[in-house]
Each structure stands twice: as structure tokens, then as C-alpha cells.
Length: 266
Image 1 (cartoon, rainbow, N blue to C red):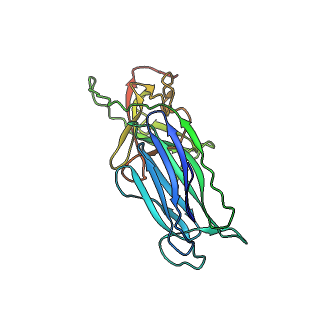
Image 2 (image 1 turned 120 degrees about the horizontal axis):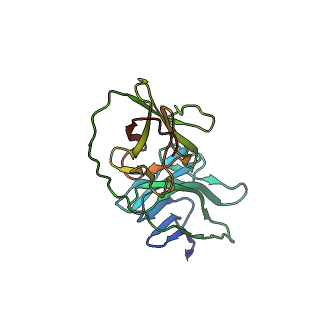
Image 3 (image 1 turned 45 degrees about the vertical axis):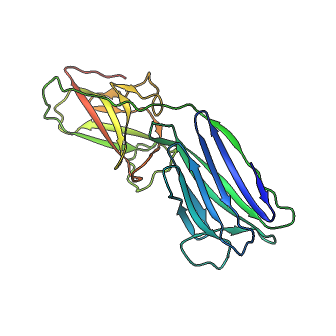
């Protein structure tokens, strides 16, 4: 999907989807004295972050399906636009763009790749486009709950843990990092309890990763729930993800039910 118009190079890196399209590309100007622009076009939940010479620059939303950020080829540039890297000895400028996308209507962004975008102004410049297929879509059904039993006086702690069993306390978790949710009764009033549902929430979106005790099929397999071990409950291991829309912060909200006796197991 490369396009050449005179001295102008336009590079398209395409992820074609079963029911949608995902494009990351640069609009390279006719001269390296002019201003380039990085673009993302997607009809799925997505984001793009340019890894620029002057720091990371997010592509900002132009409308519901387009994101963009201006760039600069100047190696002495000082400003807020994305400064490209220059290849030594040639007039080729590059920048890596981290792109993430998810499933339509699922709100989950859990796929991430790095694309190298280039603008070449040498006599034999070349652009290469890439096409990939990603999975079909998952829906995000709403789960309706009704309280049929009495309220418990137990109180719970819910934390995100890493593979070494330590609480994740940093401000940033990379997409794809293996993590686990762990909850326990801090009052000691319960013999045992089970996780009924868990939702990932940000300022605009809510996505249920556990529904009626079973995985959603995307974050967790549908045949697997959380495991109870005495007065602690453990989720299956899963890869960190991002919710579409809203801010980048995710919190987890879970609903539990007390067991009359020990209910260890999944």
C-alpha cells in the first residue's frame, strides 16, 4: 500500500481485520525541510504512542476513528512535536510507533506492536507495508446482579500481584505483562468465599472479565473461574490490558459470595 507522488513518499502499515481496518502511516512531505505528520486510523478500540527522539508523544484524537501528531525532521528541533530520528549518512528519517488495539465492542486493548515509520529522501528510498489478520470480535454483555442473601460484615482486600507474588504498586504496567488478582477477607469472619464477577473499570468504560463465576473468553477462558484457597481467592494469570476510551487508569471491582463451609477450588 505504498504511494509515491513525485518526491513525496507515503507509507501505510496496515492491519486488516475481519470486520474492520487498522492503519498506521506517515504523511511524508515533498521535502525534508517540511513538516511530517503521523496518523492512526482505526474502527476498533486503539491508541498510538510515538517513540520520538525528544520523548514519547501520544497521537491525539482528531475524530472517532482518526488520531494524529505533527513531527519534525530537524535534529536540532526544540518543541512539542515528534522529532524523528535520522539515519547516519543518509536522508532517511524514522520513528517507532507503539500501537495497541482491541476487539470491537469489547473495550479491551490487549494487543500491542511496534511499527517503524520512515520518510526517505535519498535516490533509492523504499517503503514496505505490512498486512496482518487479527481475531474476530468479542461482545461485552452487561451482567445484571440481584442480591438474594443477607449482607456480610466481612471486608475484602483486592490487589494486583506479579509473578513473584509481590503487589504491583507502580504507576505503569506494560500491556502484556503477566499479573494476577488476589483477594482475601481481612476480618477473618468467613470460612471461605467465591468470586462471582469482576469488572475492569476506567472513567468511561466497564468490562466484565468474570461473569457468574466464569471467564469472559477473552481475558480468561470461559471454562475457568477464580480459585478459592481458604479465605483467599486467586484469579488465573492474565496479561495486562488497556480499556478503550477514558483515561489510562484501570481499577478492578469484584463481587464475592460467602460459603457456608469451605469451598476450595475453581
